[in-house]
Image (cartoon, rainbow over all chains, first blue to last red; front, top):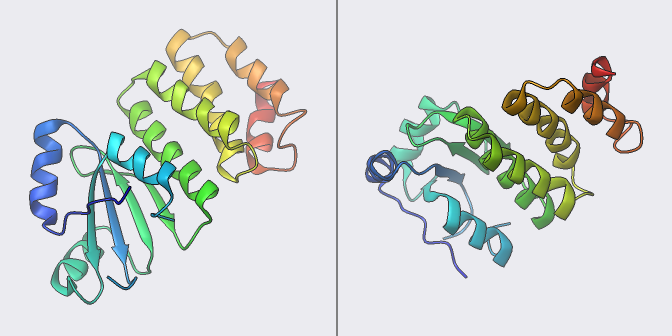
Length: 32
Length: 149
């Protein structure tokens, strides 16, 4: 199962607030 | 870390996952890196729904340790929300399912705190201190719990 990370972080923050759901924010240098 | 099915399932059930890549999302990486003082990769932040940091994981971890840290962080968010039952359930999950990880002792400590906050019964702290007399005895968490005996 692959995690579908969002790259629009502002949108992710807005959705988290609206859904009252926590966020994982990954600062990554891994190959994409 | 991320490809582990237990990790991806836990993330999908509990979080909105977002990523900023040092090269591919350079502007966002700088913006959020400054906001949260993330100066190394990988850095994984567990934020509450308001964007407040509740737990931080810096550097690579094997899957068991990473999952334990993720659960610990989610438990801290539940603790902050005073969702005591949910927090205790998650803290227990760390040391029951992943007892060999570094997070387990911390989770045992916070289980005691959570039970105390929920019930205002000091015996929860004493029981936790007793548990540390046989488990995780060489950890800083055992030292912190020793005051409860």
